[in-house]
Image 1 (cartoon, rainbow, N blue to C red):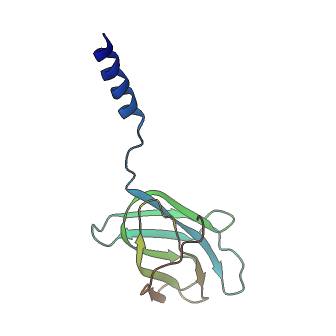
Image 2: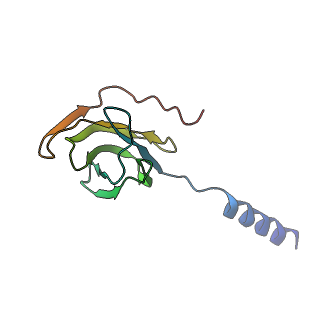
Length: 128
């Protein structure tokens, strides 16, 4: 009987262990050159390895968030009426390390774009 209890206890313990999480999130704020937030801007994240894209618009506070993205290297693009599109490439998303990518849009035609390539590690400031 004690063998059955040990097996049951072991199965219970294994079932409550947390699963390895292989996702994280990309979020940020979109503002203009004066620092005012840009609501309704279209933000697109693209996994550079797979080409998979996700798209959403910024909130009234100019904020966007893509929770539960698979880890990898991403391109983040922001477009808004009356502003040049802005693109940030090479943004590395690591397990359980949220990535904050803020944008400051320049006034101009939507057909123009500003491209920024990430060449160094992004300092993660949202948690210890």
